Length: 489
Image (tube, rainbow, N blue to C red; front, side, top):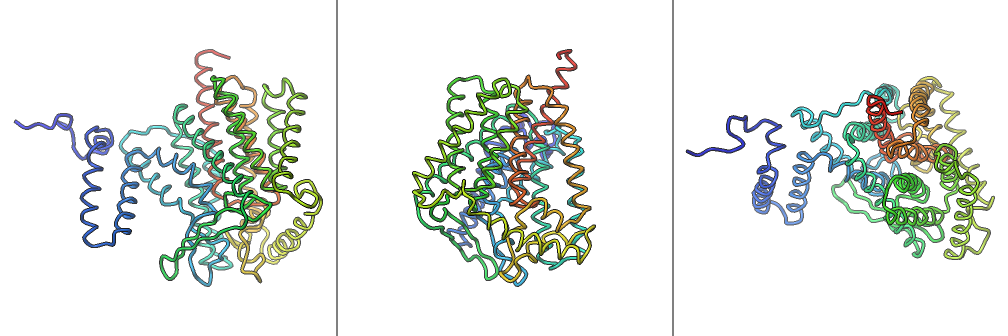
């Protein structure tokens, strides 16, 4: 009699059986891909056929292993957020702002895989986090602002970006459920930061910024931005965004340096931190440098291991930064006073005030200060004669302009709820997760400092990193709860 082994007396098509069965995981993907590849070669061109099969293979893989999607997002979100994506050719579309990132397809497939695993009972990690609820409330308020849009299609597109950013936060919060997986994700994040530093260094040696465009349809173009102009180096979107990413990876590398046991890993991580600091300085981003300094000061004050030798560490940080600044001048051969330590860029801030902040406030006050101008409106309205701007160049002003005082109030609630948890957790610095949480908070401090004069609330990598931080907080809370139950103080 023919039997089906593990399938006997079990529903063959149950989700749990499909996801956990060893035979299906090893062979069914190969069978499906081979069948569809053969079928597609009959009716499609070779290039499109392989692309479609590759996309299908990714779909099946992330459905069965949804956590792998988080690894991929750690590499693709900060790179593809403003560096590689699809631009819609339309009268409402702003070339510098309305770009569909390359990663939403990954996040959507990962969400589907997560949902199926949850339904099948294979992923039982559930988080009750008020920050998640408040951010969802912010998304709901942003959807309401579509009733008074500056340009409905543009505003709707910007809402799509915001919704996907919330999805990134939600996935991180609900997927990172154990320390082993968390550590792997942190190494992915550090690896991306190291790659950014390497390409930033390479771009400092090359001239010119390259933009590659590939026409897909009459109304759709794929754009890829590579490298940077002379003197100022970059490898992700632009110099300021490169500096932001390096700040967000430096803090994680410092956290891992504090928590790993291997001396070799500590040395390697220390070297990576210094190298990323050097790449950061090569961007010549003043806002980024202020953010990095704010991050280091935060870590010196709140991390006990650094605070024990405060003066020594304070001097060491500044000696390293000054040395790297001198090395930057030698490498880039700046013929004038170094940009990053000169006052020559005061006009840059003044231009933000004249072109962005003042017109934005004027438009806001003409409308309704309470409800705002509508999600994404500042991108269209500001610098309108030149076709709009990528963002309001301030997280705070962009939130106020688009979402009004109601949006500011919701974001303030998020801040105070998070601050409450931080003040509770800062008392406990015995475990790796607790230390990693403080280092993540250092990255947030860098972002909030740099974000005073750059970026916006709808920046994907900021949402991703905040999700990473809150996920760290929840794991640390769980760990602390276990210690309390065991009677460990």
